[in-house]
Structures are given as structure tokens and as C-alpha cells.
Image (cartoon, rainbow, N blue to C red; front, side, top):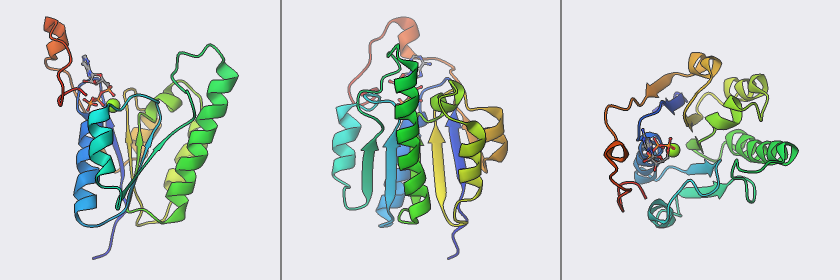
Length: 174
Ligand code: ATP
Ligand code: MG
């Protein structure tokens, strides 16, 4: 079957973006297809999903961008350097043709906070191999990314347990 590579975006303020991306990784891995997941905010994944992904290490590569990148740094130049380092890795994965699906988890923040040049990123997405699937997650997806993408889902908050003061639950939140 011919593969039509899709540019996909899961955005919005509601819960479910990263878990949906993980579901798609599972689906690809189930077919024996290679997936690379790059986590753009260190520590945004819990041990629950990290352990689960490790079990699929034949098919899923998991990489974390930049050492110690947490958005809490007050060193903007260092943040930008790490963002660029992470982006270089993402670009290598996309250009390598090694993976059926490349997932850039929480990548939208780098664009939203202008850590990276949006046009450069969109160029790389546009010029990728026609069979390369790329999935970007995170809140505040820039309009131009939404415009370019083939599939965009916006998670909308209807209710979240935190609004009632219910704390994060194991296996649901982490
Ligand atoms: P998940 O990882 O559960 O799929 P997500 O990727 O859609 O969530 P993020 O925006 O990356 O959500 O936020 C990460 C964390 O914040 C998750 O633990 C998630 O449960 C929590 N969260 C997401 N949306 C909300 C919300 N509307 N109110 C409170 N907490 C939220
Ligand atoms: Mg997320």
C-alpha cells in the first residue's frame, strides 16, 4: 500500500494530546513499523508511559530533547540553544527515512515561545519525504502549522477533575 505521509497536530487545552500520540505510536508499533518519539519538555512524561514505551523498544525509539530543558530557566540563550539541538535531532529523524512515524511531543511550545524559526520548521515539514508521517502535540499550535497540517484535532476542556480539586490519578495522569 502506498503511504501518504501526514502532518498531524494534536492541540488545544483539553487533556489527551500526548496520550493520543502514544496511542498512535502503539498502533504503528503493532504493525511492526518504526516510531521515533521526541519529548521536547524534559519530565513531561511520567514513568507510566516511559516504562510502557520501553517494552516496545524494537519499534519505538524515545529521545529527550536537551539536558535539563524545563522552561524554568531564566537563561533565554541557553533555552534557544537546547531548542535548536532538539530540533536538529527531530530534523535528522524526519530526514533519515528510518521511521514510519515521528512524534514531536510538546513541540508547539518551541514555536509559540519563538525558540525556533517557524518558517524553517514549516519548510522541513513541507519538504519531508512524501511517505513520512509527522505528529506534533502541544497547546497553542501556531496558525501557520495548523494551515499546513493534514490532520488537526483540538482537544477541548469540557471538564477536568482538577477543577473539582481531584488530584492526579496513577495510570490516568501519570
Ligand atoms: P495527557 O498527557 O494526559 O494526554 P495532554 O498532553 O493533553 O495530556 P498537556 O497540555 O501536555 O496535556 O498537559 C500535561 C498534563 O496536564 C497532563 O498531566 C494532563 O492531565 C494535565 N492537563 C491537561 N489538560 C488539563 C486541564 N485542562 N486542566 C488541568 N490539567 C490538565
Ligand atoms: Mg502533552
